[in-house]
Image (tube, rainbow, N blue to C red; front, side, top):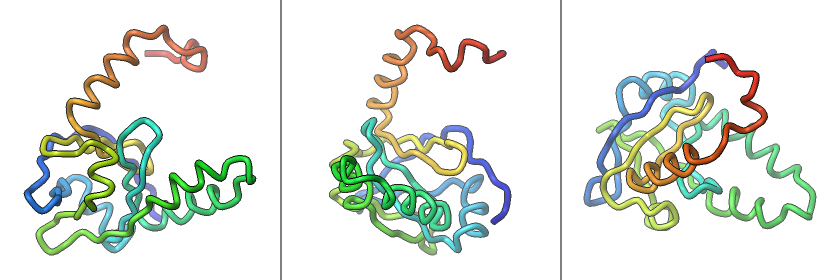
Length: 146
């Protein structure tokens, strides 16, 4: 698997059919890494995770290995997972169920998160970011150098 990292934020819009155009800066990596095959699933923070299929397969294996005590989370991640492809118009179709779960209506943000992307409703993400900034710096970042 090629070395890649998704980063940055793209402001996008869902069309009337629930499709979003994949930005060129991510499209080439997604096509070469996954042959345009993606998997979308719910994220606990209220957005969607967008995985290139090979990355999803690794994530899915970890989720499947979780103990019975985590069956609710397994259901959230695996039960809501949908396989999609980037179409000839460079768009991915977001199912009505996943759009509703993430509150996606029109204005969305596609955010690079290293080995996957997150798809957020723009207002929901702004609120989530504001809440994070109101909190003290977590201990795991105390020794992080800026």
